[in-house]
Structure formats: C-alpha cells, structure tokens
Image (cartoon, rainbow, N blue to C red):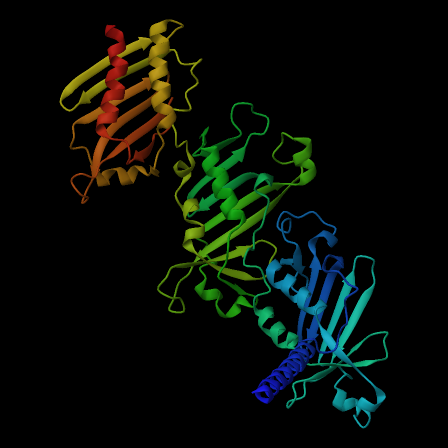
Length: 479
C-alpha cells in the first residue's frame, strides 16, 4: 500500500514538472525574440510611411500639417499620397500599435553563415517603413522577402548593423488594413464654422445664412428674394449630420464609373461658406471676412452598373476622387426651403409685440368667433397664457410641400383661422387619402405678413385637443 502511495506521488511530481516546462515553452513561443521599439511611445509618432512594391501609404498627424482647414479639422491622421485626405483613425492606430509591438530575434554571425544577401531579401527590401517622431528623429525599418516555407522574414533597422528574424503576421495584417485606411467620414467639418449654405436642386435655389450680430435670430432662409426665419435647432442637427457624412465607397480613379454618377448634371449642389477659427473668435459680423467655400456636388446614380438601391455620388471641390453614398444622407437637402422653417410656429410669437388675436371658423359644424385687443389687462394675460401653454408643446412632425396638401381631405369640418398680429395660422384636422379611417393629422398653414405660406402636419395633435384649446380662448371673452 505504501509503495503505491509513493508511486502515485512520484507520478504527480513528474506531471507537475512536465506541465511547468510546457507552460514555459508556450510562453517563450509567444514571446519570440525581443521588443524592438519599446523606447517609442505611440503619441510620439507624427508621421508614418510604408512602401511595398508600387503601393505607398504616407500618413501624417493633422496637428503637424501647419494649415487651418475645416475639412481636416477633426481628423487626427491624414493620407498624403493623394493630397491631405482624412484617414481612418481606428485603422491607423491599430497599425501603429502593431508596429510598436513587433518582436524579432537577433541573428548571430553563426546564424547568418552561408546565407547570401539575396536570400536575406534586404537589398532592395520587400517592405520599407519609416517612423518619424516629434523630435524629428526617424526610424527606418526594412523587411526582406518572406520565406515561403517558414514564413519568416529578415529585417534590419537603419543605423544598427544587426540583422533580425521576424516571424509575426504584421505584414499580412497590413495588406488587409490598407483597404480600410481611408476614413469613410470624408467631410468632417466643424458645424460651428458654417455661416451659410447655398442649396441648388435643378432650378430650385435657396440660401440659409447666419446673422451673427442679430440678437433675435442667428439664421434665416432666403428663397425667391423673400427672407424668413427658420428652425435653428433643426438646421444645426442637419449641418452636424452633413459634417459627419459617411460614404460607402471611394473611387480614386473614377474614370470607369464617371458616366454612371450623374455628376455631369448634379442633382444637388451645396455651397458651404466656412469661417476660420480666427474669424469665429473675433465674432466678425461679415459673412465674407475670414471665410472659404467648399462645394459639394451630388449626382444621382444611373445605369445598369448600379444596384437596385438608390445611390448618390459625391464630388468635393479640390479633390480628385469620387465618393458613393446612400440618398438618406442628403434627403433633407432635397426638400426645399420650407423644410427648414420653424417647426414650433406658435412658440415664435413675441408676446410683447402681439397687439391683436382673433379666431374664426367652424368646428364640427359649429361656428366659432372671438377677437381680442391685447394689452396689460388680466383678460389679455389669460388669453396669451393659454396661447403660450399650448404653443410651447406644439411641434410639426413634418413640413409639407403645398403640392402634398392635395393628398389630404378635410372631411371633419374643422377649419379655423387664427390671426396673431400680422401672422395667420389656418388650422385644419384632416385625413390622408388611403389611410385608416382613424388616422388623422392636424395641418397648420403658417403665413406671416405677405410672405408665402408653408404647411406642417402634427399627427399626435387630436381634434379634441384643438377644440378645447380654441374654445377655451374664446370663452375668456364671456367671463
């Protein structure tokens, strides 16, 4: 019995020792060679160039470019081989991380005995890499041709006589990374730098422009020589979305697909005027001082070369490449000037300037009519209080084109005109043709002074809510 215990203990010790050696061997295998660039920090690298055959990747940090450009403003890395094109930060950071993690085994004279320079593959190198640091120092790395059997390569660092053997997969990773190194965020401008946008769709033209020195409103729209207020929150959302527009494909040599892009007759042209940082800091009132233009041309894809999904093509002024993107990124800019108008029309009332308010029309077969001269009386305050309470919560789901109004039918007998000073709102509860019998919308026609009307729909606004609101205001006169 005692012998059996001793034998079991002996076997256990042997197994533990074997396991220790196996783990040690595995660890040594994972940590092949030595770290070659442990003295370099990722944030110290300001430029990187990789050359293999006729392919070159030439990268520089945007902070090192030394020029102010709204197109490059938010890009940490830029591609220099095709002009200063934004690079994918994630891909570049991954490449830099893998370079700094390269491990290789120093070769002795005995290791290299009998190996010719041709077999080393270092003259000329198969892959050439250059790292440039903030202090101006450069690290040049050469990789030889891969051994087809062992998949190892010899490598050398300029200024160091030793030859190293490398057996990692970095270069294979690099081939894949190069395909995604261009950023698909091709227009990364600062939304705060945009001071005007001219929109041209066929013969339809309008201009959205900033009024930086106007204390009441910063933005307005001019269409058909008529200037009016717009929904600034909505516009800024759309400028922010445009500044981060994402493309699905980049054509560096677009000649083969040019005839399918529709760019010979663009569907949409946006001209952005951008103010530089100095002009922004000085709060310059002029829209021309310290500004530059970026022109975006969007062509509607045509021909059999395209998929069933509708795509647009983008050409940015000053760039030779063409980008492909989905319509969803520019849909808002194809809706006309009214699309950017105020979406909370009752909220825009300046209470101090309103002198009159009147309501007239028909609600479910019953006439309604009341009129007020507004002053500082308690009755006026009560009327404006009701009006403000309702107006603050009312917001258009969508701005409608006048042609779209024909798709709605006013079959509920709800048609009321509300006039506040010089502004007129015609309120109707309507049903869209072909929709469920219970699906109704409230349509507001908004008109100010002699300017053209625009229309908005509010699907969530119930007929009963409108009735109560309007009737409550008119009841004030009888109290």
